[in-house]
Amino acid sequence: MSFLSFIVFLLFAVSTTLAVEEDPKCKEPNSKCVVSTKVFTMKVAPQLFKWEASDDQPDRYSYQPSLKGSPDLPSWMQYIYSKTYHSGFIYGTPPANQADFTLEIVAVDLQSYNTSQRTINFVVLPRKAEPARHQVHLKIYNLAVEDLFDPHYLDDLLSIFRAELWTEAIHDLHVSFFASAVHLGARLPLRPDEKEGVVVFLSSAANFSENLLRLENETKPLEKLRKQSSCPRDFKRTTVDRLFRQLNFEVDWCEFELVRDTQPKEDSYVFIDKSLSKTFLSLNLPLWHSPSRSEVPERSYVHEFLLSILVPMLVMIILAILLSLILCFHHEGIDDGSSDYFDSIFDICEDVWG
Image 1 (cartoon, rainbow, N blue to C red):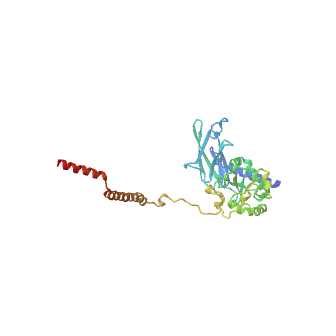
Image 2 (cartoon, rainbow, N blue to C red; image 1 turned 120 degrees about the vertical axis):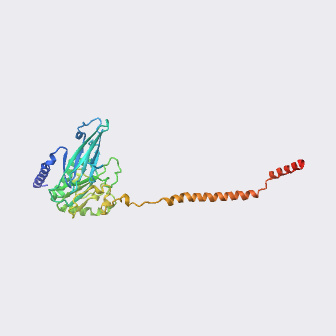
Image 3 (cartoon, helix red, strand yellow; image 1 turned 90 degrees about the vertical axis):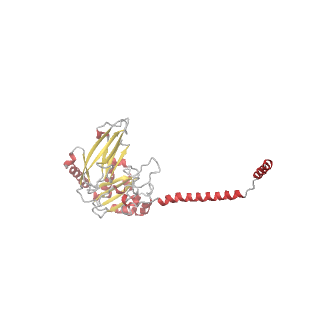
């Protein structure tokens, strides 16, 4: 990165920070300002509830955030508890048309079962730059979502593109989305000591550079593997792989993709399809909406009930009749010797006393 480019980027970052801080709503207590179409993170720690962190029991607190008036968070927002940081983290990307909203966070002390509640007012500020219609999709093997809560990881990743791969986007390059690769449909690592991987979207209004276009052509033969599964680690290293390896990023080049968005209204990624894999997302199928209760057809079980009751009863009656007839006709043809003996005794008695 040239010195002039660095100065321009520094001025842009400072001006953006000042613009956010100048908003009067951001200075209000229990308020947090976020920028639309840009990832934000918020740490949920015991200090937020005026509790003291315990070194002996660092995970003694549990947190449950939700949208005020709703049982859960918005579809574009996620919450995760990190045992590494012993804190919870709320993260997401506000859509372009997102209005201000309020979150309620309930904390529970798992030792004493005391509870506390905090209300955070989120002020969504619009991006003053042009809509970011160009995105770079990356999958990084050796990171987990909780690693991205450390700012230096994303800063190092952005510095690679600003300095080497996408210098045209130095003014407005930002992270518009990140999530766990497993959360988006990838399988868990075979080795327990390996991390699950993350998917990161980098967005900008600038056109793709020649370096990115060459990288796209270089990874184009891997598109067939992309639709089946991820590449094995070290399956193919590109010519720019050294830039990422130097900063400890192991990139899955089968998942590298340049997305050209020509629709101005869809310049942000929303967690609508958070449980779907990337393969399904590439099909561009319409979202399925579950039918209402009144639209579900009713089913009658009278036929099944009669079939399960009457048929066995009818078979039982027929078998009982057949068995009775068999016993009746069989009894008439039996010659009983004991009966003849008693008949002879009765005849003798009649002769004696008759």
